[in-house]
Image (cartoon, rainbow, N blue to C red):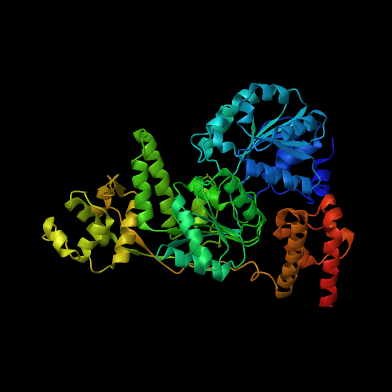
Length: 595
């Protein structure tokens, strides 16, 4: 067997493993099963790629999406790895050629879909080959408690039980304790060593912004902070993605829409365009999810609130996978929260499932309403304790709160006095003494509380109701009316104080260029231009040449010799042979210009 460190350095261009990686690699190479929970961008792929190259036989990676498989295969081939994939996107001749390569030992890593392993003849053939390791990526899909449940993953247990001595790895970026236990039990690897390396992504800045004019807010955000950089904007509906993408295009921003309603050919084409672009914004539903294998996504925006912390964290994790600064921005409003609770309550599901799903929404809503560190709260949802991060909006621009117990009592009392039959909009109108005629018709004009809420404006009352829902004092019925929860009594009796979060101006993320020294930024742009030319020449995505983090290191260290270039993280032997001379010539010119 080759040394794992030798492979890491000469194939992938890194002189040492990231925290947590080596322990996983050592366990797998010792023949042990492993459950690996590592944040997106934390280096999960290397945990199975290195053993697959170091050990006799071929590594098999079970991956849920064709586009994701193809991107990873292209990236591995660029690094000099003999990699391939078997999936429904291949014609008969291509599939047969791939099988032949496996049979003669011409592949080190083979990617397959979970659906293919449901075929008995295919698994018989695969198990007849010498396998070094089997890696199940996105393993949370096996659990109904995960956020991307896939029924096909449940059948993987049958394949795993036939592997005998081949080590099995289950890998995911986000899985709470319940989901982790589900994974190992359902896959039949209860003996797996657990490697939980932490969930923190310190390079991502988390921000929550109140919804006002969301489209205009989004355009301002992109223009001020991320001009000509790649990002993902998540919307809840297919129609919203189309309309928002068109709006961004009308404002001169390169954008495409992506959703499950598009023909598969169009989805693959658009994903390929995004992967190869250095400036595109993809406006998408969650259908654009696990297939995102692009390290230079500089921002992820949610214009609609996700339904759980797990889904939110998984989606924001697609930003900044290269370790460079990135931003996760969530636009949040009371309508989002009410609508999410309504949609869940309308589901045809057992009451226990509905309550659990609503609790997940409220957990995320509670994080949106925090006045303390958002990262700290997010990590605590996964059982990880941390100190204040210094890199979220609340840390950078501390939010303020005021004791609003009396106003909260007034708001809750009005819900009760109107028979818990109305939504936020009408209740706020009653508090402000508006819609006089309708209030009179409904018999609410004579309520003692009518028109007594003028100490707060409409925006503040809406915020207060939203925060009461998020804190669990109010529930939302299917038709949108508010109901008092049992805990509302504590506020109405004065046993519990209620503090209202005041909306503040959100902190801005310094752009990538602003965080570099001026000469480094200029060099980076020159190197970026060369990278794009080479990527176009070889018909690959730019990051497959070198990612942003590698270019930034080149711009900072200015290597001008072969040895200095190989010392840059991300520069392996194959890439040095293929691209090294062009980059060295460019860097020497930059050095000469600086002297």
